[in-house]
Image (cartoon, rainbow, N blue to C red; front, side, top):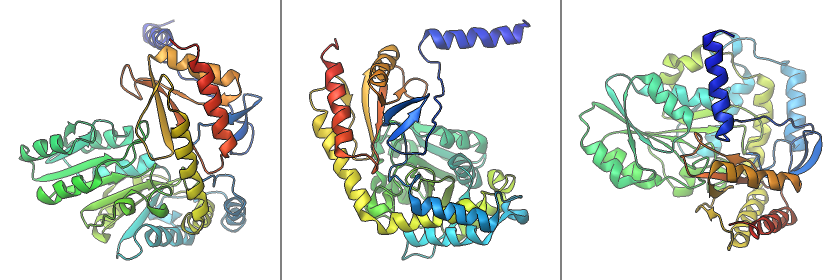
Length: 391
């Protein structure tokens, strides 16, 4: 074995020794709370399909119809021959859902990662300063690095610390960049305070609402949850979580969106999302808009879980979102707890460093509208059972 390959082997062995080696499980059934995984039936609390739309017949049938009409793929990037009528319809539908009373524009992407890279790099350059929450998603951090801007991180959800950093920066262009709902903590950024600071310091406010879109603000997302609207806000949300399909979109002032379209490498130089997926997403957007009962049920499950988790020996972080993290601390113990639940037929992922900081390994309980109250009670019963032997 040559030296460079041996180095990789040592690094992987080190990860395994620290209980940080990740493994994939194979799902053998259609999406839903009760699925087949690695050949066994489990009750899953591992999905970001918050409204249960990934297996919804209306979305599934729209996908089939879209494939019959448009074929399997786009065949080209949006700026060559890959921008289809279904993409155009979807972009208008997303504007109508998120910002129905404003003259904004949306741009769709194949993934949220590509969308965040585009949003950040189109607005920041070497002369800019990016002010980023310490717990931002990896793709926002990667976008900041690719932009070559100065990156200044502020303490998680700490508007006072951000104000200090903004006031001391001489940068001619400033961008405040944040998740709306944080993917591993489930808490919500103080968006009204961040917008006030953006106005005070003439900064852009870039918001990643991957985990708020479809769930908060009557489905319109975290901006609607807070009642916020401003031309300096650039909004991104994914379409593979609450919308149940795949992809993402960026929404903002038409000049911002045109700038992204003309300059963002992750938009220009990648094949467009298959138009059949855009057809399915149009159906999903209609459900997000019209089916309030799904969100009501999800929020009732969240309240039920939080009430039932009282007395557990692990820290339940404050969250009104579908993400309910139970912080265990040590990575090996978090993995052991997840494995014990797995043996009892429940799939609840253990999240470990570097996804979360050292000493904060956790179970990430993800609730969906597809779960029943009995499903949540089953999880709570098993957690309390495991807690009896926990020291």
